[in-house]
Amino acid sequence: MTRDAIAVWLQADTDVPPGFVRSLVDLLHGEGFVVADGDDPGPAMRLLLVGQIAAADPERVRALSQDATQRLCVIAVDDPAVPAKLIWDLLASGASDFIVADMVAGAPAAVVRPLAARLRHWAEIDRIVESGLVRDNLVGRSPAWQRCLQRLVEAARFGDGPILLIGDSGTGKELAARLVHTLDRARAGGELIIVDCGALDGNLCGSELFGHERGAFTGAVGARRGALALANGGTLFLDEIGELPLELQPKLLRAIQEKQYKQVGGNPWQKTDFRPIAATNRNLDDAVAAGGFRADLYYRLAGTVIRLPSLAERRSDIPLIAAHFLRALCPDGTPALDPLVCDFLVGRDYPGNVRDLRQLIQRIAPRHVGAGPITLSDVPEEDRPQSGPVWPDDGFRAALDAAVARRVGLREVTRVAGDLLVSVALDQSAGDLGRAATLLGVTRRALEQRRAHHRMGAARSA
Image 1 (cartoon, rainbow, N blue to C red):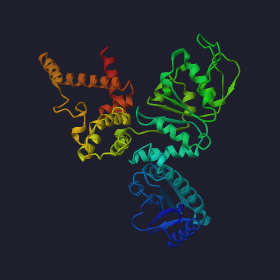
Image 2: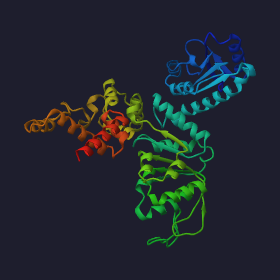
Image 3: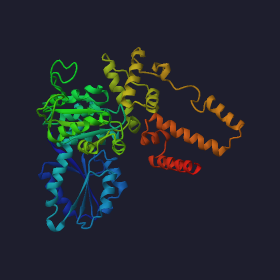
Image 4: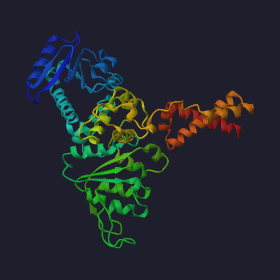
């Protein structure tokens, strides 16, 4: 195998004609691929040949693709009627793509060209994902993170449109934006300009984006170039886009759509050409529905939407990320993590996600002394689990004592406690129903139904 050869692992069902399999293997060899069979595919791309698409049931696809972390193309031999639902199920289960071979049209020769194009495309994405550029900055190997990186690299390298990064605070959206800029062949030579839309300064926020002319407002003693001018030829990263003032949204939309804008206090149109990347931890659909965010700007920014998973969704990555931070903090030698410390880190909650984990490691590292591994004694007192139960506490018991003393029944206590718990969760999640449902361990739908039922009950009481 040459350095650039792509390994392909092939599995064929017994109802696939042996002649089809042999011809396909020969043609793939002719295209420069190395084809293997057997029980262990290793890191190779995976091909599953079936007589009918239905034979590639979701569980089988999930196992072969290892939860969509390994590339899998399903090839059906002469299956003319393929229901759409079955295809959606295959893709949802981890298949990267599917091909239906038309035996009348000269298959397998007709299959090889589209198949080879897919395999090379995926191989390039996976090569970049495995590169130091990605692995040394966006650390992790969990299935959720692997899928996110594949989508991010594909959009960056093979696309040129806007990207909207969504996810909780601290999930790595700025690092993702930097990666997109670096991988974008057309934009990497320009600048990456970062604008924190949540920190724009009142009346001067238009100047931050668009620049201003001399004398445009009090204190404008000279002209200033804004972020749109600086990003020309490069990338503009609009962090916390959901916080962008409503009055600036149509002006930003024009700049993105028509590649021109006016400076504050100026009349001439200025030209600019940049790739917009926006990020938010808010639900922009809800913001649009509430009138706080323009629908046309939202749809213009959401060319490709990529959600960065929370740390809770990729707990297996926590030891890897912790070791990554330790390497930066301990240049003279990275200490190992005792298994009990790993268990502690993996089981802990991280409201601030990766940023929260980094701060914890920054508190642990200075306490470690000697050549041995980091142990539980290196964890600061304030970060250790409490010896007693956090809940229910004495205050909760006192509230129940008062309820019983007032002859409040079990049904009423249960109802009030539930309503208060929902209210607290909504407060802690800034009104985001999805995040509140996650805190309560229920689905968003269940929370919506509870609130609707509560409102109906309140209306009947009124």
